[in-house]
Image (cartoon, rainbow, N blue to C red; front, side):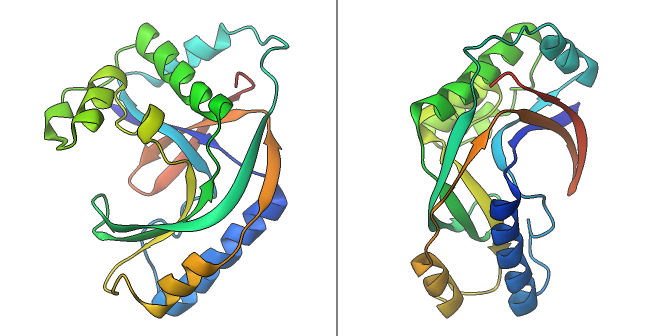
Amino acid sequence: MYKIAAFIEFDKKIERKILKQKKRVKKLFGNQKYLNHPVHLTLFTLKIQKISDLKKIYKKIVISNKNKSLKVHFNKAGVFINDPLTQGHTIFYNIKKNKKLCSIQINHLKKINKKINVLKHDFNLLKISILRRNYKKYGFPFAGNIWIPHVTIASLKDIKSDHKFIKNFLKSKINLKCQINELKFYKIVKDKHTFLFSTKYI
């Protein structure tokens, strides 16, 4: 099985802002989980049997005028306290949720699940019922209303949730916007991200 991810990437201004924050975290706390990940919004991750099958889906899509660009708006800083995926405190910049962004996520998940086999047999391991339902349906638990669109800075371990840095980070302001007109797919092996292909179908 291969783990693949659908990413949205941003303009240079936003990328510089986030990389600057990542460098600050590394200087203060050393290497932390997610620090070396590329700047991106994860639309979803899936486990599939053949990457070639995924590529075939998007080769057959005809792009129409209806698939216009998407506007994204970074509007605040946030933190996932005691993130169950990392056992750390994951700091991030929030992206304001909108109907088009949510529909893009669901439309791609539906299209992929309709065409190819997606791994879903671990859904009973999820404790929250909506996460189990999403995983059983799509192969990705954080779909639809429960999804929090964000760009991760890092997940901080061995510090308290009320650490001065986290408090100051949550007070920090961000108000950046950009237009997106493509979605990128990557293969993920541990912390390594390998670009596969992009699509204008958003």
